[in-house]
Length: 201
Image 1 (spheres, helix red, strand yellow):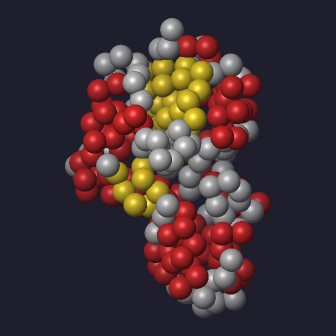
Image 2 (spheres, rainbow, N blue to C red):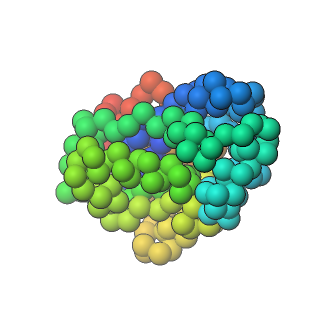
C-alpha cells in the first residue's frame, strides 16, 4: 500500500527546458554549454553547486572563467534561469488534491539560484510559499546530497520515518529512478511527453 509520494521538481512539477539555458549562454558567446551541464550529466563544479558546496558568487566567477567572457552576474543569472519555463496551474491543483490521500514530499537536485527563481515565480502565481505544498521539500543544495546518491533517498526515508515499500518516487530521469528502486522504493519514470496529469494515483 502506498502511503507517501516523493516528487521530483524539474520536468515533473516545474516545466523546464535545458536547451533554453544552453541557447541563452550561446547568445552571450559561451560555446558548448550543454557539455558542461544537462539533465543527464554535470561537470564536477555543477555537482558541487547543486550540493551547496559552491556559492552563487563562485558560480558566477566560474562561468566567467570557463567562457572567457566578461559577463555580469545578472546576465549569468538570467541565462542560467532561462530553462525555467514555469508552473502549470493544473499540475499544482492536481498536486494539492493528493494531500488528502498521501503524505506528499519533494526531492529536487537544484541550486540556490534556480531555487530563488522558481520560488519567486510560484509566489507570483499563487501568492503562497511553494514549499507549503509538501510535508517537506528537500533540495540538494540544502541537504548536501543529490540524486542518484543512495544516501540522499535514505536520509529522507529516515528523517520522515517512511518505509521504502510504502513510498512512491516519481522522477523524469532514469538513473534517479534506478537508484530509488535499489533502495526498495516504488517508482514511476515520467519521461516527456508524459506529465503527472497522465497519472492515476
